Image (cartoon, rainbow, N blue to C red; front, top):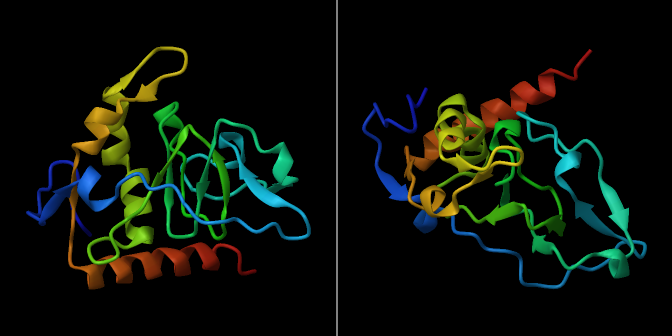
Length: 175
């Protein structure tokens, strides 16, 4: 529908990743529910789909130092082992490993559902894998990531696409 987002073969307007979806951890307070908060580790995200496999609730005092806070406005992108393709739009507030980058899509330019699909797409994945460093535990080179041109189709098209994807995901579970 949008062409190749890396080559931008449809000629969409673009902005740099750092401008349209900066890394913005949540800065507010995360209030425990029944004394627990959500802790999201990489192994709890299903590769390629962004589905949460397990929602681990822990005592706030058990949150380690290598974490950051996120909100439902973030799109979490795993910079570790990009071939696992772990991108998630959280449905609540929580804490995540610092291997997840809490991107904050611009609400005037970028729909989170469209954006997460773009990050999980084959074209983006193939490109970012060639930019990773390390062999056993490759990581995305964030200086390259921040300079990627993100395609920006009209917001209305992005929202329709995201709604279609949500509806398609729901229909997979209807008997």
